[in-house]
Image 1 (cartoon, rainbow, N blue to C red):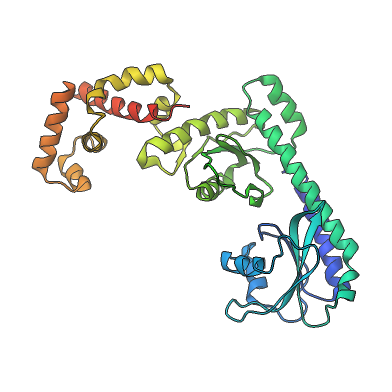
Image 2 (image 1 turned 180 degrees about the vertical axis):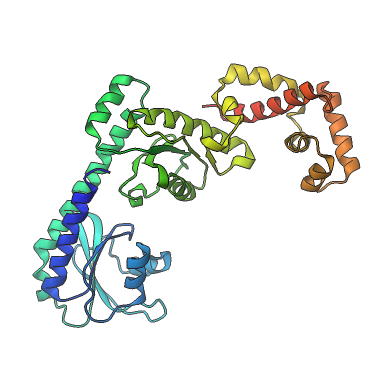
Length: 362
């Protein structure tokens, strides 16, 4: 989104020059082994290079093999031997370092003539690529700050961010619960995605990418995610962010929507998600007597979610019908609600869901 085309073009030109000078197959990846650019094929090709070009990213197994040779901390080219089991030909890895930080890797298939003297010829080009990646990383940090402003409640902050960001709609906001102690490589996300760490993690993605991005980041953290509604106008992205927060709340506390909840799919749960603690507590009073018995809570919730269908409820819970009738009767005695009566069933259903949301009210 932010000068992505310019960055990509400059790096592609650089990798083409390197491949031309060395007469070797060259590939450029970021520090998470995500493909950025590659030169024309020269000589043999191995499965790793082929997969990298086709799938845009190295496998975890290949990444682990390469990292064993200390490439992340190396300041000079690293020669990596072949591994037939992995489908790896011998190659040279040139870390792309700027200011003593590794921002990516230049990979060269080593057919034999890549001597240190020949590699020295491309030192200026390697430095150029490292500088471009470093500037891009800093730009992403700036975009993260702008994203915070874009999602702010203050209209003035949002207006300032809109002036600085060169974005196109339609977009959708994503909220992902962070995991304590876990560092997630958000820089590996497509350059069309804006990301900001925090509680929760905030992202803004093109609408057609939102579901995939949410699933990917949710998987990185192993927690839950919420996706807001699509907005055509970037000025309304903050509304999508509010919806993403609400959807995250539902995903965390209503099991059937976990691990990723889409605002558009929440139906009546959207109204519950918007309620504050006082209103939720008022609803939860109806089923307060059940809250110490998780088995009873699950039974009543399942029964109500199945619209009172005893057969379907018993099947899902894996219990005999008589057991189900016993539990429902007990719930009625504890709460004073008649679960065969419409208004009482509605009160019970709202009460139990409100109680769940109260456990993690933001």
